[in-house]
Length: 266
Image 1 (tube, rainbow, N blue to C red):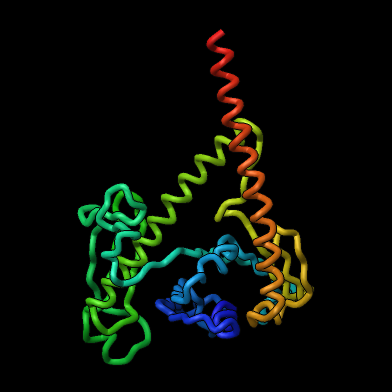
Image 2: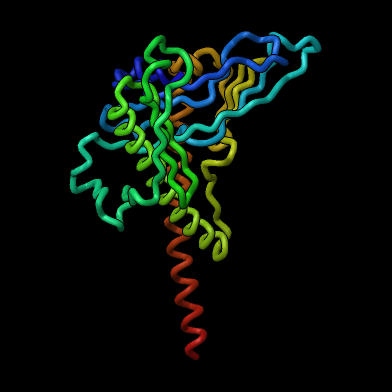
């Protein structure tokens, strides 16, 4: 879906990682199961376009192996992380500044070098090129094995790890602000862990649970077509309204604290 979307909008992208496994023996399907996929989009402005896709996407369908016609529900978590150039010495990124979101102390990271797994021919079986980084304080793990070069895999793994940790730090600050709003004026915001969209095969329906928009254009949406554009734009509108509410809530929170301090001073 997102690869097709990028092609239609002429966005430059690279499939950084695609991990799949064979279906379990108990399954009647021979199709591989995708465990994790990372798509890097390098076109400027891509993060602003796609950040509305972050969240839990739910799929409802009747599998071909289902003999009693029961609808099965599955889900996938979509993370949208701001990336940064390979040249990380730029002042804006400040990867060496302990106060920066992108700073990661090497002493907090365990590096494991291993043999690549999966399809890939002789290279997979003969070279220890796969890299796994574990950020010990947060238990965040990133593993990259797509390049033949251990150096390139290590470089990409560090980029992904920094992006993931930076996103976690931003979300922690946002959550702290959200909790303050809830405690003062009762305004909450939908987070990354909430269900944001449902794709229903039986009804050929796509519903976004943030904007409330429903389209009966499932195939078009999954092909990254105009239907996906319409849904994403509706979510951006919803987000703008929430941002305005958050600004108002912040102002009311400040006024409430000031009133409380004045009351204490009397």
